[in-house]
Length: 256
Ligand SMILES: NC(=O)c1ccc[n+]([C@@H]2O[C@H](COP(=O)([O-])OP(=O)(O)OC[C@H]3O[C@@H](n4cnc5c(N)ncnc54)[C@H](O)[C@@H]3O)[C@@H](O)[C@H]2O)c1
Image (cartoon, rainbow, N blue to C red; front, side, top):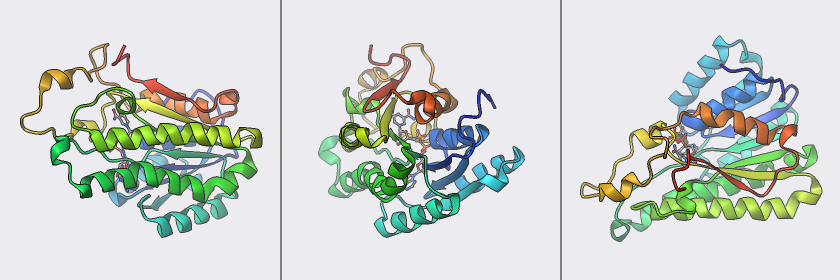
């Protein structure tokens, strides 16, 4: 693993969606840079795998896991409180938990719509709300996960795009609300990163593939979760101190 700095020594970090993909890569990166990290996810097997990796690296004493469905308000409140208590506060929060469903909008059931909004947008809000007092005390930073779907047309992903547009708006609003209190809130908008979410994506059988191909990164290949981890660490660290209220695209120019 690339080790560029120790920007998180004595820092307390919580990452949701850390059992896979970009959340996993960021949790490991923050730990590699010295952080006390709790990796949380709804998937217990994903967490076992990432905890095993942390043990191999020798970080077991400061790398914990917590099974958590971010859409479960009571569970969010209790798990976030436990993390803050165990780690003695909270400096960095990453909201990477997310789900994607691709269907024709005419066939998007209310159930699909509600679940996508509940996990991606409400889940992000719930975790932030529970963590805010500790983050404000630490003058910490929040990194949210938006998507290029929020700004550009991603066919068959209406609920997902709406949820991610909400995440960008939430990011900007919180940044404005808490800037004077010293809390920074930023988002990344990935596009074309190879993770289980993208690799296992099921499109409608009659999907217009020409329209879908517009979502390919312009450099011709998918990125890896690690392509985001260094940027995430920089944004969350003191080196990101002059950056707040932005959503940064990490998509190899997909929509240039
Ligand atoms: N991969 C991409 O190209 C891409 C593009 C734009 C945005 N994103 C966003 O990046 C974030 C990370 O996604 P990824 O691509 O690494 O996918 P991923 O599927 O590898 O990781 C998402 C993780 O979120 C977890 N999760 C799902 N529902 C949850 C819930 N209710 N509570 C807690 N955890 C839950 C999953 O178990 C999984 O471990 C997501 O928010 C996703 O929407 C990804």
